[in-house]
Length: 135
Image (cartoon, rainbow, N blue to C red; front, side, top):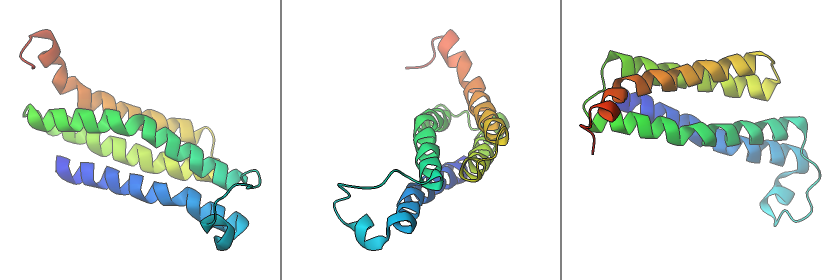
């Protein structure tokens, strides 16, 4: 189940990677978007939000992947880890939806939910830090 959560988080990242391009094509047309993009107009609010949401995901994705992979390697993929991974995914989906629609404070709430998922992922790994059984 943890591998499924990892796969779905990566699928979300893949989908989010295409959103700025789609909004740019909508703003300037596909011909300009496929060109060198040297003289683009300022981004629309939708394009700017899609870019910001993707940047924000890129800030948390390495933390999620590190914690999830460590959980697998160290044999700590129990219920708390799984719960954390799924909460992270749900929070990130909510975050991108709220970011794109400009929903405040819901965007911050969704981010907090995703952050809680990271905390839950990290908790089973803490004993490895304190008792020196990690690498």
